[in-house]
Image (tube, rainbow, N blue to C red):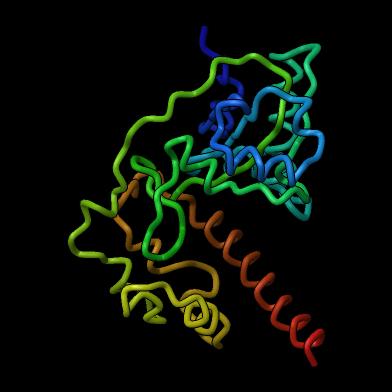
Length: 238
């Protein structure tokens, strides 16, 4: 019997994967054990993500007053769903949280994540317009997810418009130059201060593109973090 994720789908938390802990690769199990020393008390890991603009619209309808409105909405929604569909079972939230969870590795196991030239995970159908929202451990016996074997959209892309569109030339030599990307984003008048032109140029999954307001929200927050680390890092090393 399949798991009923309908309540999550309706608000845009429409990517779900369930893993049996004992079936995870050894490296993933060891990392979980290091991240949370009580992991052995649980049987499964549930990974929840969103793809497309629906989650943002649900968050906006709920209100944007919180410091982290997407995280807060996702946590509340997933915890409510878990309580309703797995009564009597225990769970422990790993993400969002302080546990160093390798979300990209879990995304690869779920069949969601392929690497892209600009270092944002790319989904076979949804392109880069997806994100990890909640990861939790549970003592449930839900049917484990079977990951689809899907090739990366990048393998079918001959024109690489993302590379040409990057005003920082961060991928010009065939590798991603993070310093070039960050340096350009911090410049006065940067065209990537509140967006990513390389990401917008990628044709994969373009019909699932986030709303402009969500893109602005996400990149404004990331630039704020970049500036914070630049300032506080300089103070620590000075």
